[in-house]
Amino acid sequence: MQEAIRKLLERDAGEREFQQAVREVLGTVAPFLARLPQPVAQGLLERIVEPERVVSFRVPWVDDRGRTCVNRGFLVEMNNALGPFKGGLRFHPSVTQSILKFLAFQQVFKNALTGLPLGGGAGGADFDPKGKSDAEVMRFCTAFMQELYRHVGPRVDIPGGDIGVGAREIGYLFGAYRRLANRFEGALTGKGLAWGGSLFRAEAAGYGCVYFASELLASRGLGLEGQVCLVSGSGNVAQHTAEQLIRSGARVVTLSDSSGHIYDRDGIDGEKLAFVKHLKNVRRGRIREYVEKYPSAVYVPVDPSLDHHPIWSHRADLAFPCATENEIGEQDAYRLINHPIKLVCEAANMPCTPEAVQIFAGKHILFAPGKAANAGGVAVSGLELVQNSMRLSWQGEEIDARLKLLMKGIYRTCLEAAEAYGCPGDLLRGANLAAFEKVANAMLDQGVA
Ligand code: NDP
Ligand code: 2IT
Image 1 (cartoon, rainbow, N blue to C red):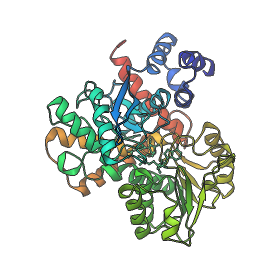
Image 2 (cartoon, protein in one colour; image 1 turned 30 degrees about the vertical axis):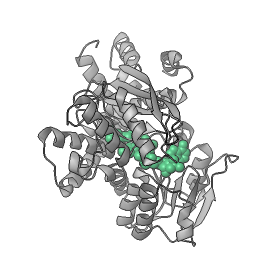
Image 3 (cartoon, protein in one colour; image 1 turned 135 degrees about the vertical axis):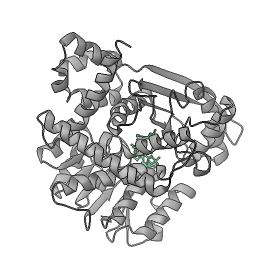
């Protein structure tokens, strides 16, 4: 199988993140493929790693000093066998085609697990919203949408948020879409509540992760109460993961951004989290300011000379990586298993390297794979679309109840697939096999399309 995957990816040489994501999924689906005649399986694999469409475009805009800036925008439409393309938009200087292909590939299988009729995609640009004025961000979003509007729409491709794309950016993008398309329709998710957004969309990815982790812990007779938790990041997913952990009686002791992390041994409570939300979402400041406000906490700046990330060295029971891909490497995993950590829940997309995942598996650490655990975000995006089509909005309690049910359902789906394919308890294989089976069967039903 490894050789077959290598051959499949020959054309994508240099796309490191995409290759990593493909290997992770295809490396586990041999038991499903073995049921198909060899030529059918081969044709399926060749189609599944090839995006339906990749659009790359110039995004020219003018900064506050009157200078012309040019960024590179992308839209990756990976697979629409189950429904219209859907995935996040990422604005970050590190964005490349490889990163968006990895996100889009993962999204295909994540969306399949939600049970909603959604295909998978992703988009974004190498634009850095950090340090830009609101007016600059708006000009960039307007310029980005000048190309994107040709490709998106409620029946075609419906992007939502991801790193660097939150409520502000979705607002500017939607404003531009509405004017360019001359239609008011659900072409984006994560919208404001007054103009087609859904209650609980902002909370969904983080809350959903905690609901998933809670199911997994319960299977071992454990609960969240009193558990010491490491949370990385301080953006949308980290804030809401921390919020739901705190509500569940767990003790969150870390948060981070790309410059460093804070460690608060007393625990981050509701009031401290409200400070972080204001710092990050309104003042757009840095996490180091936490220790100016709460001096008993410590701040540790990033040290690029280290072979590990010190945030994972603090003793804890549970780890929730909520920042970005590959933030838990081999050396971090060794530290985590020594605590010993009881559970690692991937709230970000692909935050654990393949080596780290192997180390956790070797020690039978409970492991919640991102495509299952963080699917609550896109699932509530799916519910936002349903509300838009029906031209109504549901109450918050109704959506939270649906989110809980969805996360329970995803957990059960992974567990049952793992059981059916002879790897009981292995949620990563279970998630991949259940999702791959669903997407593959839809593709086979629809012929060579
Ligand atoms: P945000 O932009 O709101 O927050 C991202 C956080 O991660 C920030 O604290 C940021 O720090 C940090 N970060 C970003 N890039 C890096 C990096 N290269 N190195 C270190 N830290 C970094 O994004 P989200 O919270 O929305 O997304 C976080 C993760 O969750 C991503 O993997 C995303 O794909 C995934 N995800 C998001 C969903 C959503 O609905 N938004 C749903 C499911 C998954 P800084 O401010 O310094 O950049
Ligand atoms: O990774 C993800 O699932 C997201 N960034 C959410 C995408 C969405 O369409 O809501």
